[in-house]
Each structure stands twice: as C-alpha cells, then as structure tokens.
Image 1 (cartoon, rainbow, N blue to C red):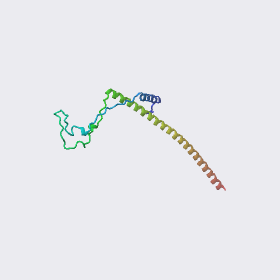
Image 2 (cartoon, one colour):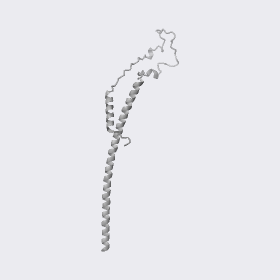
Image 3 (cartoon, rainbow, N blue to C red):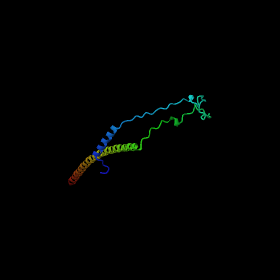
Image 4 (tube, rainbow, N blue to C red):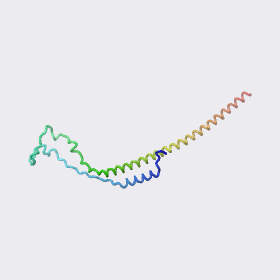
Length: 156
C-alpha cells in the first residue's frame, strides 16, 4: 500500500522521540542588563565641568533631547552568542527528525480513522443491500399475488 508506515517503525520513532524529549535539558540564559543614564544627568543636556576630553564637546541641536524617544538601537537586547555551525546543524537535524516522526504518527492516526470509517461504510452498504434485496423480494411476491387475484376475478 502506497504511503503505508509499518507500526514497528512508528513505535521505534516514537520511542526515540520520547527519549530525545526527556534527555534534552532546558537551558536558561541570563542576559546582563545595561544601566540607563537618565537624560537629566546626561552630559548632552548641559556642559559638564568634569569632562576632560577636549575633542568631544556636545553640540546643541535644534530639537529638545529630553522629549525625544529612545531609538531602536538603544532598546535592543544584546545578541546571544551565536551557536557553532555544527551545533546548529545537529539541532536542526534533530528537530527535523522529531517533526518527521510526529508527522508519520499523525498520518498513521488519520489512516486508522479512515480505515475504521471505511469498515463502517462497508457494513452499512451490506445492510442496505440486504434491505434492498428483501424489499425487492416483497415487491415480486406482492405482484405475483396481484396477478393471481386479477386472474381469479377474470375467471369468475
């Protein structure tokens, strides 16, 4: 049968899936928080006498900096350390394997449901055919009786 999956294969893959799920540990990654300097204390707002850098002097702009919204760059969280390519590939491979197992199990369940429905419909079809045969026999019997009644009336 095309697309049929052996029950042992599904059982093996389900066992492997459960083993993988139980062996994986959840890792909690803590992200360090960055301190935010209030705008009022910022050296941009007013000239700081503590600044010893002669090259850097804040230039006043035409807009009011205390009312401006923080841009997306200042609100971003620090990037997570990138995983090595091998680790990513292995993780994706495992994800694909478990997804394929879940898909096969789902399709097997759908197939079982369809097979049960087919069996029920076949049984219903047999019942209806039997009922049809019984009614057809009854009609033949009644026609035969009517012919006999008409033929007996003609004789009399």
